[in-house]
Image (cartoon, rainbow, N blue to C red; front, top):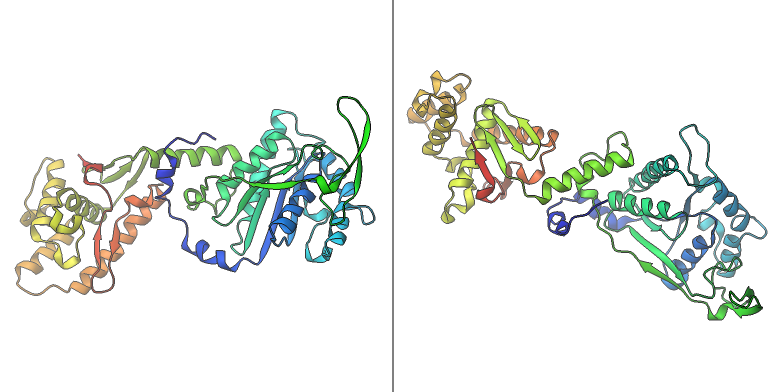
Length: 418
């Protein structure tokens, strides 16, 4: 994915669902997710670094791999007698039942015909690997009571790239990603899986001379390098519940949202068509809805510093405000009527009844007016959301009960109409 240079500014405006922030404190399962190929050592090396060096709990291990990779995992790690996962558990006094890892937790990549490839080589293989890796990460991050630690050290390079991209798309604030680093003498040894509590000697062939020598695991070092990454889940939150689109479609949609946010599109109101447009996103509103939205857009554009930026409580909206907005709408239809003439303008009878109440001298029922505005605002924002308009363009409210004010949280120069 291409991430533009000032993305961090736009991400600051992305709203992460508050329930996710709250649930972070109630994590009940820690999942280690790895991509692996023909080097299953990365699973136990990462496991060693997490549990023995960083003191973290791992409740479950999942691995994404190919058919050949699965066979290596079963033989090298999960064989009941000589498997290195069980050896690790024995060495460090861990009951395997407390750290779930078995064949059912190995996710095999598959082709469109349902076959499992021995390796990832073709463009088609890579495309389907991307979709499946995203699907797995999406599923594992649905439960707010889980914490995901993704290791991108193993497998084909494209598998690591796709896991990285999937974490960018779906990871929450408490999920992590890392790469395991092993000291030079041990990083390519088939017989090295982790640093045991009691040193052992391993035979190794010198790369230049070809001589066989013995080295002790006491000199081995394993480090876990945390990989900082940009989390885009807040951008996706509006359509995470959709039927899972392909990786390419997710990238396209996410980039479209980023472009929309990054370029700070203006808010454009079409007075004739009653549409709210931001970039390539457009929502059409009913007459009452458009009038209310335009009213607060006009207040924001016309606001003076002593008017709190165009934010108004219902009882602070003046007759002149209503008249100015009504004239704008009618002028766009080449009629330019005064507010007193609203009864002659189709579908603006709601203004006529309001004006009649004001001119009668009877006090307005402000509680009823506030309820009407609240309901209208909800319909407006729902239509904007359905059109894909970013939430910062929604008609907002601030203050508590009895002091509720409405407005648009935009810079005045962002708002245009015509």
